[in-house]
Image 1 (tube, helix red, strand yellow):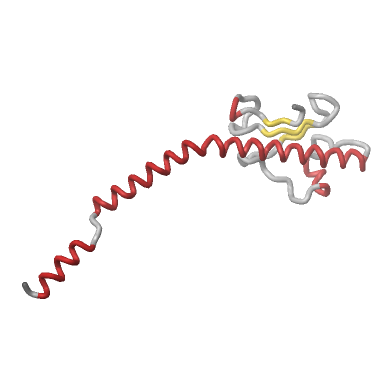
Image 2 (cartoon, helix red, strand yellow):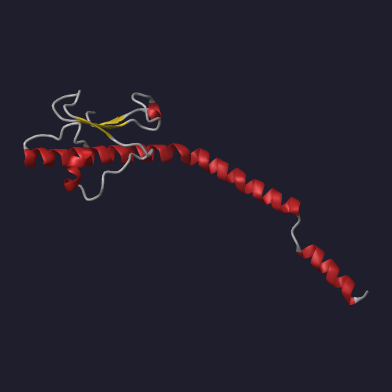
Length: 135
């Protein structure tokens, strides 16, 4: 057998076929889909916890504002009025929507601060339920 024939056989066996590559990519995609199904609800739960934490931080800053100014900011002033009492700018909620601020509030003497949740609409249930300051 000549040297050129051995080299060609070795080179043919050393490569990966397109079919093999497609099988590997399909398996990786299946594992990714399974992992996403398992982690998806946890990601949404984390967003809800982050939104509630932010609402609580706003309420603390609003209390400080009230102590310093003997009043809460009006609805028109919005959450921007408490910016000096926060370490960062007023963020959007975890779904990319602005937090809602109302004073006077509809749920007691404190202002209402809320996020409309995943659907960005008032109300909703489960993962789309509003995250509010009065509960």
